[in-house]
Length: 68
Image (cartoon, rainbow, N blue to C red; front, side, top):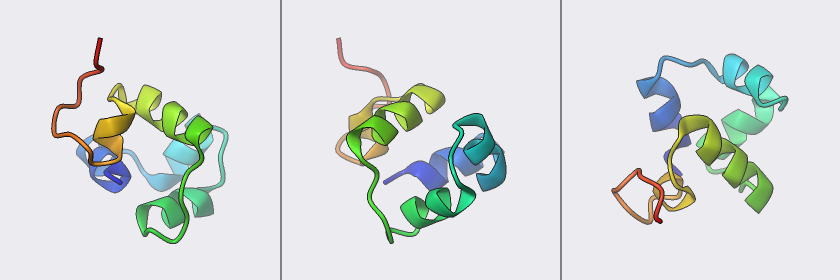
């Protein structure tokens, strides 16, 4: 998952992301380190937050744009 890459590109800390999304900072860390997989609702929430497609977030495409 490209979560860590997206977060760092935008200069957002794990703590800020967690606060913005009403999540636990430990969950963000586990997603970034591959210790935990996000459920579909969380994937959508993260993709919406970073304004990218879920496929981009998951590394299935290099095109960050939403498919229409």
